[in-house]
Length: 304
Image 1 (cartoon, helix red, strand yellow):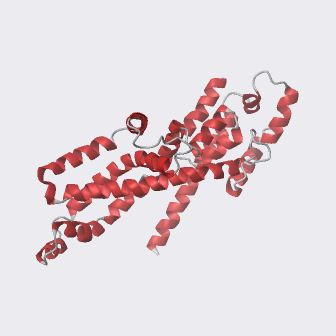
Image 2 (tube, one colour):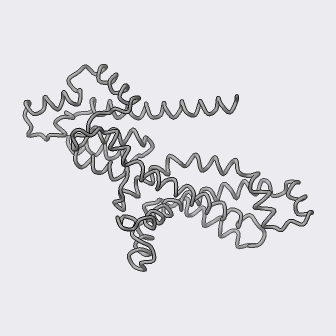
Image 3 (cartoon, one colour):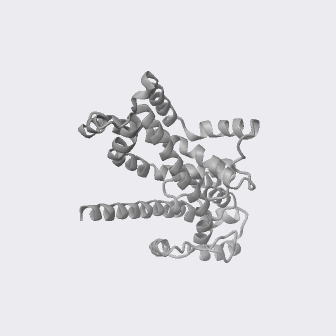
């Protein structure tokens, strides 16, 4: 029952975060200076053109009515119709784009977790001697390095100059492009997993069950991989789960950087074309993406 209560509490917490972030977007659009309808149609639009758009966006109703409609649409996944693609809902456009983003993030989780665990086992085991310190230092340096500082450099070196990997944004790259983009995204996660896993393995290094395993003739590799690693799985799973939100935001950043299809490209497109319902839906779909909020703020600053 304790585990069930924890899961329910986490789900409710996630729902509250989404509602809170969505509400911030809602009130920002309506309370910040500037007419949302005029932002879409431009300053030269006359009242005859603005009135139908205000009605379509529900801006002609009282604020509390607009908010009630917004919450209803949030829970029914009906956030309005795309202004750039009439007849297509904003939620459906986000649903089409979130699939490639989820693939990118999921593959990055698998690669990052595997790389981090391998690095931690190599760093915790006795076979590397003093060279284990270089693994710890490398993981610390990589974890502190922003994704945008090394992703373009690595892509230029491997894809543009050496041509050993496909360009991540090439439509014809297929799985190879997805794998390379996911590997870039997995590097910071792998460094975090390596640091936490190494600390967890150090805590069980002197445990009695490891001493028994060695006494029974188990090799050093078997001792660490078969016996020590499962006992340290809790902190590893925790750090991977805690990084999922940031990883999804990183996937959006990579998509915008390499022009890959996905949620990041949709956010940039809806921002540049002033497709307000789609931009709102995209922000709601990824409430941890600070770049989406930056784009939303840039929109208002550019118009006021």
